Length: 333
Ligand code: 5GP
Ligand code: MN
Image (cartoon, rainbow, N blue to C red):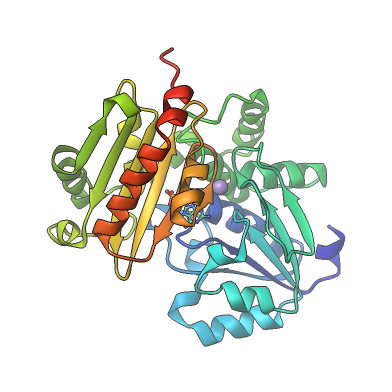
């Protein structure tokens, strides 16, 4: 709060491919700071999916990738930069370097394990399910709850909801529901927020999902694992919108006995991987060991610079190496 008081030009930023928690926390803080009379902007590395467009302020968000020189100027001229929902500068590519090099004071508010260096203030709580929840706790402690607006409550609820899969995982802390109750008192409609995010997909997403589940899924029952994969050629057969594959990695976890799911997707010049797990299997460890990635215990991601086939090969090797660990983590009940 001291840092906010002392600053005039405040920038809020978040990780690449912003999700509900990233954008929700950024916009909630944006509205809050503007109410304090601060000149504030949100700048994100690349575009966010259309199912987050309903959030108030989302049309004021600046996208670094659209105009890097302008983004660099914004980052350089700020007094204070909030870094929300990521732990390392490299998660903000392609604006990692200008962000890191900006002379502004940097405040990290995040819930990923292993916060990196380079922040002036680090508020890191990996035990908290979402950055939105963490931000709410921070604002409430600072006495900001009574004046919290409905729009701010909606943004916060959105991130709490998306980072827990609609409160289906990582969501057994009773305090989460005390916070939801406080947010509902601000007049938010939680069912509408759910529908805005989860009932807002395109037809093409469903066609692609159907194709993938029937043609591009491998199940390894003894390893309690599943693999989903889509090449660029596969994706080209469908009308493809950004964000259409969001959440695909979760589907195989609904299969009895599967506790580790991997989704490998070929992009332009790189291969993107999403990992999801249940129980104690550390998907972030797997992501870090083989795919230069990281994340949470049960939801992680990584990247691979090489061919799609090489990425599949490396995954197969990794799975073999983790055989014992997966079997040990599997709990049939
Ligand atoms: P998703 O699979 O939804 O893209 O990402 C799930 C989680 O994995 C994210 O919340 C983030 O914590 C982490 N993650 C995704 N991609 C990367 C990556 O390339 N590097 C690292 N370190 N973490 C990632
Ligand atoms: Mn998050």
